[in-house]
Length: 346
Image (cartoon, rainbow, N blue to C red; front, side, top):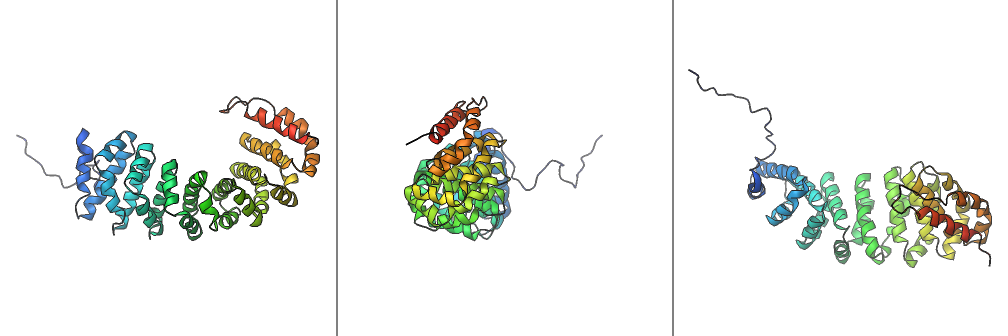
């Protein structure tokens, strides 16, 4: 006859860092109750289990309906570092989806996220900026960020943060907000800060700085500031950068800035006429396309048209459809426009 045995060891597949997940529709309601108590370990376990569930997009709407975000809002300022980190990580998963971004905005998450910008834990700061950047993808959220007067705060955080990954997340938020309205950033020292980042040692930081420079330079005031604070002189060397994304971003920035005569003349002095032609031989299609558009913009200068006349045969060769591009004829139109601009005579 068998007798019961007591085993001292835990089951091999039991994760003690996570709370037990109930079956089916009871999973999220049960985990919400875990977040109510005072026991730090229980809250941490509940947040970890929620994090595993919310990686699956099908649980996002249910979590919102069950009030998970209401509970998480209280935990963003919890005194325990791990709880704050797990909460912010959870918000990143939620903000990855449109329904989650809308919920975060409606629940007033902009202020709690802003308070985490100066958190003592770098992971908390990074997750806070990442969540804010994902929210800013939607126009109402970007508008709300600007209405909260966070433009100067974002610029200050770029300067204050040493971690390149956090700088990138802050610039992501800036890019989305700049698409809505650049005026708030032009009233700060954003242009000076971005110009300095163009020479950063990290290629991803340089790439994001070039993209922000493009966005902030769309208004006329942005073009004026770009000339005033030396953005053209800082971006021209990036046309030879070893990173293809940086080269494409630099060409796009030149195309945007050099609309005004003042900017074109400054670009000529900075050697842009000599720096652009090599982009036509680049092995990356988006770099070639950005180079063609930059050449077209700069070709309004007489000296540029004269120098670029030798590029006409190459530009005509590039007037072929790109089968893998979303717009197959984009290169054809860009090259044709460049040839017409170069060959234009008064």
